[in-house]
Image (cartoon, rainbow, N blue to C red; front, side, top):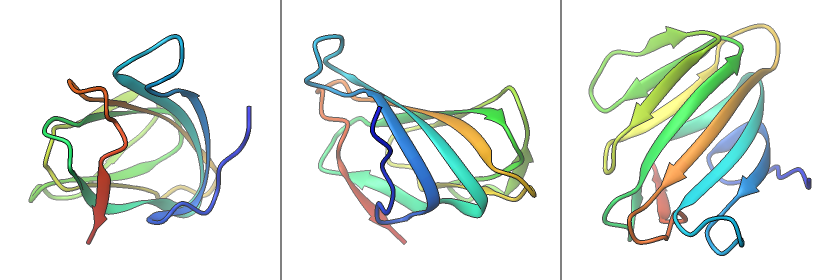
Length: 120
């Protein structure tokens, strides 16, 4: 599986995509594994051009700071699922001292899970 780095708004993060729309296995879901270095993560953003685009981040290992909308930042650890509803600003950051592993799942009723992210 090819590693992906350097995506805008994805700091110190290496992603490995398992599924994306258009693959034989799926029409509506994207699944990737992110290996996030300390201090790295996904900057605050939301998605445009897609009416419904939900995310779930599942923390496999590490300490992750999560912010959803106007809520206060929370620190979560291993075996935590983070649900990010459509059109809500969200971000994650590795606040631990070692790499964190996070499973990133995106889904859209239209099959377009690549909606343009708008980074704040």
